[in-house]
Image (cartoon, rainbow, N blue to C red; front, top):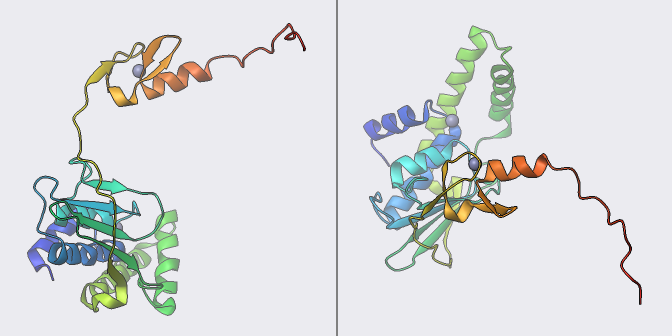
Length: 216
Ligand SMILES: [Zn+2]
Ligand SMILES: [Zn+2]
């Protein structure tokens, strides 16, 4: 388990302690133990199937980060994580157990409080209670056996390509240098995505042909 100081740094990075972050911490612990230490380059690649709180813990602790290119998001809306070691291809996937976030009774209160906090209708007492519940739930998640949270198994995955540095092309409309693989061509101009979309949206729909093609 990670030490208190490191945990405090994770919380500082994310902004608060919450059950989602705790789930990410637990996933990262498994990755660090079974796949390898904190990546300074691309030694380990993470494929994450969520874009919620937990990914901040995974990035901070494993060194698989969005900016280095060894952090891949697949938008499945699942709290599932795959870690791949480049040196020998060993990979594990952690898939969350049903209801791993909490029992329905404790989570009913948490859900009600969260809705009130999110909508801005919670008073000071409700807010305090919400964060107390979040802390309680997070602490519990940090302490339960990993088997209660995740099914962890070795998987076969194709090795993701190394991150590549691409050349840039200046967009013909806004002039902003844009990675060449993102440039789109319209009317012979090389455009960035937003300028391409804007030009296309500003066009009238293609007029129907006025002459029929000669039939057979
Ligand atoms: Zn959070
Ligand atoms: Zn542009």
